[in-house]
Structures are given as structure tokens and as C-alpha cells.
Amino acid sequence: MAGEDASLYALMESNFPVDRNRIAMELPDRGGSAWSFDDLSEGAGRCAGFLDALGLKKGDRVAVQVEKSPEALLVYLACLRGGFAFMPMNTAYRTEEVDYLVGNAEPALVICDPSRESEIAEIANRQAGAKVLTLDAEGKGSLADALAAHGNEQLPPVPCAPEDLAAILYTSGTTGKPKGAMLSHRNLASNGLALRDTWRFSADDVLLHALPIFHAHGLFVACHCALLSGARMIWLGKFDRDRVLAELPRATVFMGVPTFYTRLLAGSGLDAEAVRNMRLFTSGSAPLLTETFDAFRERTGHTILERYGMTETGMNASNPYDEERRAGTVGFALPGTEVRVTDDNDNVLPQGETGGLQVRGANVFSGYWRMPEKSAEEFAEGGWFRTGDVARIDEDGYVHLVGRAKDLIISGGFNVYPKEIEEIVDDMPEVDESAVIGVPHADFGEAGVALVVLRAGEALDEETLLARLKERLANYKVPKRAFFVEELPRNTMGKVQKNLLRDEYRETCRPAA
Image (cartoon, rainbow, N blue to C red; front, side, top):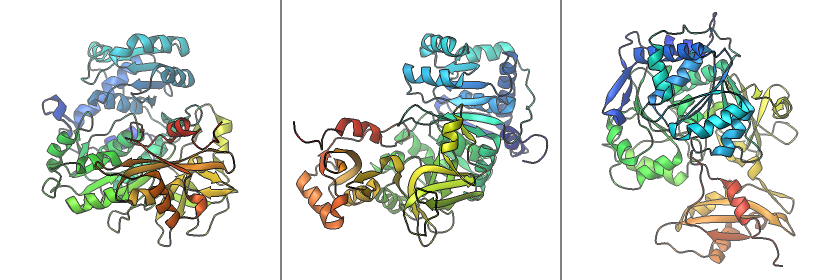
């Protein structure tokens, strides 16, 4: 990233193929049409030129809540090219959530689905005085119309310094209001290059892209790996099991969340022949069960590569490409990133002990948007970011995530890590999956409650389940109650929403009135 321009966009274009007519994106949802790398470059230039003509200045925020489309990706590239800060919003966010984010970020422009134009326009006008344009999954809307009227005039790439703001991604906000993580060109570029090289991406690769792009996984991890290597993408609007299976034989790389893999395994069609040209499957955004890891390897001959990242840092760690990929671990720190495990006072713990996971590197964000005090709280001396994750590093250096610090249960003064219990419950033959949460308890302060999803046709009762746990765990770790549910609530990236479960079951361990 040396020289005058350290922008991520300039780095991407420098890694495009020499032949810009090579296909960058195949679009099966649009009759098999395709876009070349030249189409991406020209489209990003025209869109950036239009945003400039609207009056946007370097550093202005562009908030985007639209369905996945190649045009939505062009908006992101245009922001990088023009020096604007891209701010994606989850398509599931409703009025109150969008109202808060727009009011907090004060974007100059909001792009939304046509079906929400009047609603978003009211919010944008009241909160930020922002312009509003629309874009749907087919690439149609007032933005497309305005771009057509704008013509072919392009904005040359705007030089950016490494620390210049490239994007703001808001955290999920499971506790308190969402916080806007400020990601610089250095953050995104360093992480993209580390992943490209670690996972051996090249212009010969074909990435089957079925992730949403309002999230770091689909936008930064997947797209950056492809665009920084000149690889081709097969672009699906969403994950659909049949569509993915149909396209897999033409792909070399697939990135998914654990739910994608459980769905692929649930039925016929996934076998060694279907993945004959694949070289890499990765999983992230939520823990991958060992059972899924093993079943996928047995069915396909491929070992899923699990990695670990977060909104504030991008990717921090990855299982190795060539060496052993261990189930239940997220591997080693990526090149340029350091990890350590500490106690509550930021003292580094010996290998094998469990504590707070901290990371440091060029990938780590500078802080939360307009929250300097909160930002300062999250960093330990020396630039170490407190991730909020609880982990241990084993004797071979593999990082094991134990859970989130906020999910920690303190029962009778003892620390209880839900993942340790969940792994044992999930190993029971009757169980499909589980989640363990902490709820108020009169004697112990907090007590564990297990929410359990059974396999189809299986039966298990609370007494038997808890008795089995008592055989394998210290008494203080055993949940006080177990409830059997049809499914666990998840967000769009497949993470179990334990905050919702804590709210629903918070009275279950209180004494009867």
C-alpha cells in the first residue's frame, strides 16, 4: 500500500487481470449473463461520478439497505473509488432500527428498496437531511434511472490514505444500541491480502457466492478475496440448496455459515462428484458443530476450513490451508495479526488457560463512530483490542473459542462457559443442537438453562438429560433446567440469538410465588 494512493479500490484494480474482458461475475439469476472486470471498473467509475455530481464529498457516509445484487456491489466499489464511507444495513432491520442508524451516522445518501422509499425518506429527511434513492434485487429503481441519465462520465479514483475511513459496519446490538465500527482502507486491504494469500486465491479460482453482502462475511471476506486475486464469482442472490448444488461442479471455492452446510447435508446430491472441482470450503460467522464438520468430510472428502473474525477486526484467525484443520478450533492468527488470552486485568495467561481473547494488527478498527469513550474502553495498553470472546490456546497453538464474555454464567461465584456444556449436550444421540443461557437465580445469582432441539423422531426428558450432564460435569456447571424447543432463534448470519432466549426464559429459575 505504498505510494500516493493507499485506497482499497486502487489495490483491487491493480490485481484485476491484464485482460479486463475476463469474466468477473456470472449471474445465473439473470439468465446466465455475465459482467467482466472492465464492466466492474467502468460501472464503479460511473457510479462514483454520479455520487460526486450529487455533491457527496470524501468521507461522506452512504447508507445502503437493499437486496443483494451486482449493482449493490457496484455501489460499494464506487464508494471505495470516490473516498465515501460505505455503510451497509441488514435488510431485516425495521423502522426503529434504521431510524437509529441513520440518525447516528448522518449519511449524505441513503439507498433503499423501492418498497420502503417513503418510510426511509421520512427517516432520512428527519435524521440527516439525506438524499434517498432506490435499488431492487433486479438492479432497478431511481438509482438505476439516475445513473442512466448521468451517462458515461467517470470519477477517477480518489487518492486515500491508509487511515481514511472506508466503511462503517454496525454491530448487532445484542446488548445496548448498535455501535458503528469504523474500518479504514488499511484495515480492509491488509485483511483481504492476508486471506487471499492464506487461502491461496488466484485468478484460476471460481467463488460460488451465496452469502448476503450487508455483512462482513459476504462483502469483505468473499468479495475481497475474489477481487484481490482476479478470481471469478458465480453470484447467487441468496442461498438455495438446489441452486448451490447445481453450481458447485463449476466452482473451486465456497464460503458459508454453518447453516449452509447443515442444509447441504440434509438430503441427496452432495457427494464427491458434486464437489469434484472444489479446492476449498470455509465456514464462519457462527460456531461449526464437530458433527457437521465430520459429516461433511465423510460425505465429500473435503475438510471444512473454519475461521474466526468479527465486525471490528475482519478476520483474525484461520485453520491452516495445508496442515491439520481441527474441528472445534479456529486455527492460528492470520499473518499480520496477533492474538493472546488474558485475565480480567489484561495479564497474559499461560498456554491452555481460559480467558479473554485480545487481538492486535493492521486489521483492527480505529474505534466506534462518535463514541470515543466506548472506543477507549475496548482497548488494552499496547493497542490490544478486547474482543469480548472467551478462548484458550492449546499446546499446538490452535485457538479454541469458548464463548462470548457476555454469555458467561457466574453461578454461585463460579464461572460457567456455555459452550463446554453445549458440546456435551450436542453429542447426545437424541440431540440435534442446543444453547445454554444464564438466567436469574435466587441462591446462585445466575443458573444455567439448556434449550434443546431434538432430532426428528427422538425422545429425551429433562431428568435424563440433566443426569447425563452430572456424570460428566462438576455440579456447578450443570444447568438447573432443560427445555425442549422446535428450533433456536437465529439472526441472518446463523448466530443463535441468546439475548432473545434470556428474555424468554429469565423467570424459569425464580422461586414460585
